[in-house]
Length: 281
Image 1 (cartoon, rainbow, N blue to C red):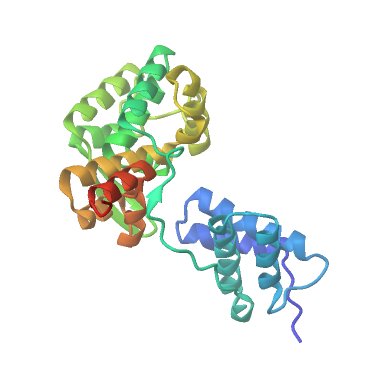
Image 2 (tube, one colour):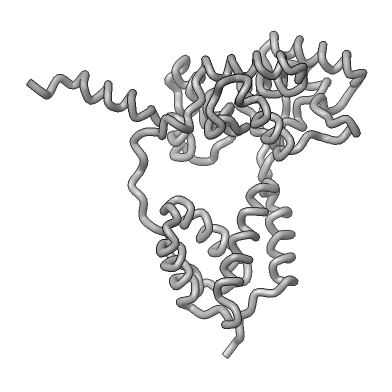
């Protein structure tokens, strides 16, 4: 009988395979972290058909949310499929589709405006422009490297991710701001958002810089992270177009179901919708 062990070598090969699939850095980190956590919980035993089911039960016992449990299981199942250990995979928890979004996570237009003002008030011009660029185009923070001087001149960026290429249109006003900033930074070509050492800015750095302006902006820390700017773009785009299929294309989603998550209303909005039904005498 084959002894199935998780080794440094198999984990490194798994990470390399994910990079070959053009998975984003954060996804690779998340998947490999889940595998390491599972291996630490399982040690010193080897992997068997029911091992992942036991870990799932343990995660639930620890009080982790169903969504978090499923996220960890997704990485582990992907690892098992990579190794061909299909009998070791485990079914995720069945979750009812959420009807509304938690208000402590939703970034409003007004709060977004305060973040921009706070960034500029603190002299963080690059951060302010970067937040505008994400929010005005719906681009992922990992795709900011495609916002180049050439793209700003053309008014569009060609984004390549996971073997797919999509075109991101850049509003004229944003193009002018990007070009003005680039010229001020003496950037003739290539990426616009660079660190002082001339390297591309990382998601971790953008996240940290956004958190640093929360207090001055008067915006809850739980609402301030790069991906929330993409959510704000999605809601604004849908309110203007009412076209979820086109929005999915703009965001680069393979499934409209993924796009729908971006369009959840808040609990307060959901309550108002129920009240408008007029079914209570």
